[in-house]
Amino acid sequence: MQRVVRPNNEIIFYDEVEWYSVNTPLYIFFKIYRGFFINLKGGITMDGLLAFTVLFIIFGFGDFISTKTKAICSTLFVSSVILLVGFWMGLPKTIFKDSSLLPMGSILIAILITHMGTLMGIKDLVEQWKTVVIALVSIIGIAIFVYLVGTPIIGRNYSVAAAPPIAGGVVAGIMMGEAAKAKGLQTIMVFATLLVVVQGFFGYPIASLCLSREAKRLSKNLKNGVIKKNIAIEEIASASENVKNRPKYAIIPELPKEFQTPSIILAKLGLATLLSFKIAALTNNVINKYVMCLIVGVILKEIGFLEKDGMTKANTFGLAMGSLLTVIFANLINATPEMVVSLLWPLVMSLILGVIGIGLASIPVGKMLGYSWQMSFAIGITALFGFPGTFIISQEVANAEGENAEEKQFILNEILPKMLVAGFVTVTIASVVLAGVMVKML
Image (cartoon, rainbow, N blue to C red; front, side, top):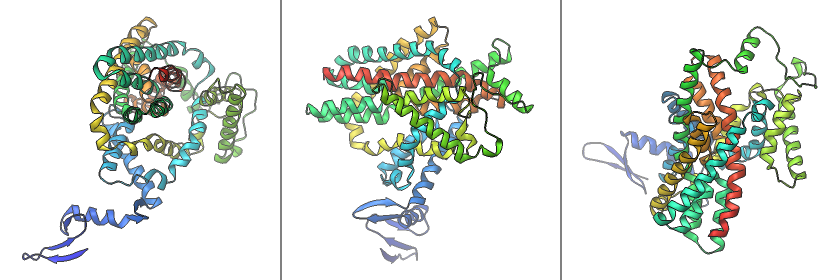
């Protein structure tokens, strides 16, 4: 870097990248950037603490925007946009690895799903058969509409490759990408990967908008006495009166208060998750291991082994969700501007067709089953992001729309079970089956 003094006594520093004046914010930003980012073996990496801090600043800003927009622009959507633009402008693509959050998130995803199971009762799952029907019909709507309508518009290969990722995301996208690679269809392989990366940009805002309207409807009906308070509100009221609420089928005694420590709570969640994986393996993975985590979490909470909302009680939920977000956003490092531009037309058109297919399938069926069009569409749109987006957006909407703790919990109890079950049906189960069928059509 060279120091130059201009005739007006303004000091200028010349670097290999650009001229920067010491009295401009751009120069200050550049110095900070240079001070924290270091060259290592020809690439750019970040200090671990800095990477951790930058990520949570981005997530925190996403929370701020989500709160201000009442979850219409969700944390996931805002964070995705910031990170994508950041990578294009030079943000180190190793930020997730450097923060050490990525490997943690990879481990915690199963534990978090088990934790999600403790938030629902057996009665909740049995009652969600309507949600399962709407979710399955939505996947069929995606497959038919994207393939039949999309083929004459964007081409057969693009339509075939698009339907499974739109219906489910990562696993289905990987399956289609590998099939395309095996047949030498490099462009289709990149297309399938890019769909996985950007489909959340369509799904998150639509889901947030639908759930926000549904929350308003629920809140209005609750205040007008059209619907009754759900059990969550009664639990809050009981808790405020220091009345203990135990699951109906609890056969395991509750641990004394002094033994309900974070380590013991997390140990039990870990044991429950390991048990889930073992049971799934015994079924030869006919039941997906993550689906089994959800089921086991529900059962072990009902019999009293697991505490309800254990990770929150262990004061680990915030960090766990932050690390899990890095697993979602890690795919963004592969989306270069050139890739986006070259595949923009088939990418956007296939996603539009997928969303239309979801709407045409989910809304009429939902109406027949007694769901509002907002809730039905939100259930179908979970195909575009799945867990943990289903949980995060449900929480954001409940917190944004509820006027007090009771109302927030009421809204969450109404929408969360539907969104969780829908996400598992679309992303974990149905999309993989769809991918298995459509790989043969490439």
